[in-house]
Image (cartoon, rainbow, N blue to C red; front, top):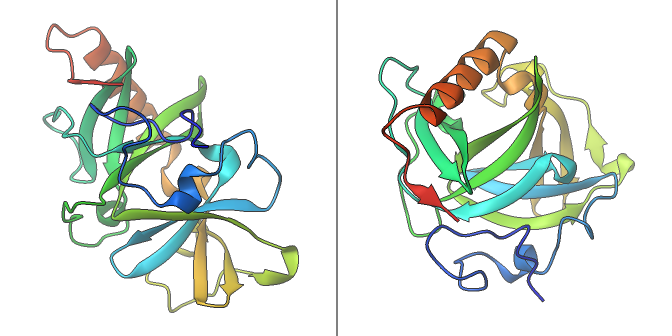
Length: 199
């Protein structure tokens, strides 16, 4: 049975999201053990996020754009009354913008800010599955070859289908960038121009 806490969708009834059954079958409560990662695709690479950082997954809905922000800030969405910044992870990594496709979605994750946990959405090509990662599968970040800053990478997980880049979300955004996004969310929350509602 699909857990609606994990697969929340924008404008559709939970259960009709275009997400893999392997993801829909895992609820956050069932996947909260250490060593479990939500895997997703982004521009020909496969990445993993610690499931404890993942709050939910949304089908793509166009965010409200915010002027004078870095290119990787895709905009903000209104998630059940809370304004959530959305970043284009590809552009954050210094790559071309993510192309919007049928399986494009927004992963809502929780990161540590100056004022406590903050929800941030990341734009990805597709969500794949929740995988158990044994410690013996995980290798230290390589010094070169990934095209990413080393501090963005928590480790490299070996699987039967190849390597998965495990991201360290605490380093993907600097504290200054986190503070700027918090100000954006706060400003949008008090603006007369509310972002489109996602449910």
